[in-house]
Image (cartoon, rainbow, N blue to C red):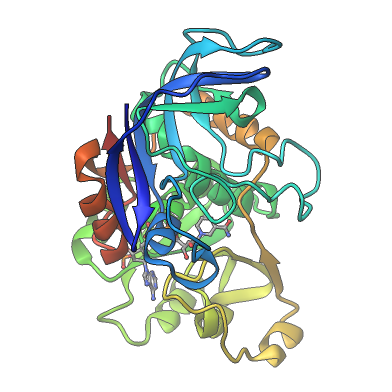
Length: 335
Ligand SMILES: NC(=O)c1ccc[n+]([C@@H]2O[C@H](COP(=O)([O-])OP(=O)(O)OC[C@H]3O[C@@H](n4cnc5c(N)ncnc54)[C@H](OP(=O)(O)O)[C@@H]3O)[C@@H](O)[C@H]2O)c1
């Protein structure tokens, strides 16, 4: 079978023997993969995503069909359509350091960039019929993070205002969930073309953060000077100060990402204190959250936004494109 491994900050396609499932494991014929910003960071060895050594299988997210099961498998059967999970050890309950270990496609475990992948049966989730393999593959990392940041760790009510920063994978899921909750959504982007597409998907207000240097004032104008109730903060570092200008008193900033590669920055603690703002860290989500997300998505027949799909043999190119920020929503990979 074909399998990618990371060597010298590149993904290298190899031919290896197809693996067999052991007790409690299932073999999945992968049908589609989807990329995240972190796949770019892992392959390029950036920040905490740097690998200790070469040889890791890349890519966190994928979906496929179960073609073989090992002994003692109870809940998954041959023929099931499943996707991977971003933190398979976090099945339910509160997050712990141990539950976050073993996330695929990163320093802790091999990813899904192969034609066949063996998973523990608890490390996959069945996907609803209305989603294609490609659509289901888009959900494990970006979908669950947006769901956690907008639904599980928020106090949003219909009619509340939500600020979505940029139009990458996490951001567009966050926009879709906020819209489904009946919120008024403001989307920022560096591209007018992407903003137009965001409006087509239901965004109520759009702002070009690259051409409008005073875009935080525009957020305040739209919200009658009060600021938004909730922000999906994917940019990170000192950008938090800009989000602090846009949040209303008692609002929540869901701190999700560090897309500019910065986790550090000087933050105005006074703004947080005087305005009683809550900074809510968000780290992916559990399998139970994933189940709740799938239920809600099916109810709303919600589909991930996938702007570009590469062939499996173009994975290196696809990962490079992920790093460019050119995408609108997700980048898919067909097997
Ligand atoms: N905490 C967690 O568990 C978790 C999980 C998933 C992802 N993340 C993090 O969340 C971030 C987003 O991940 P992703 O996979 O969605 O990334 P992505 O798809 O690569 O997002 C790229 C987009 O980010 C936007 N962007 C860049 N700089 C911006 C700025 N200054 N202001 C507003 N938008 C900006 C751009 O949107 P435009 O082109 O529209 O300008 C760009 O297209 C990353 O830092 C990732 O590591 C964290």
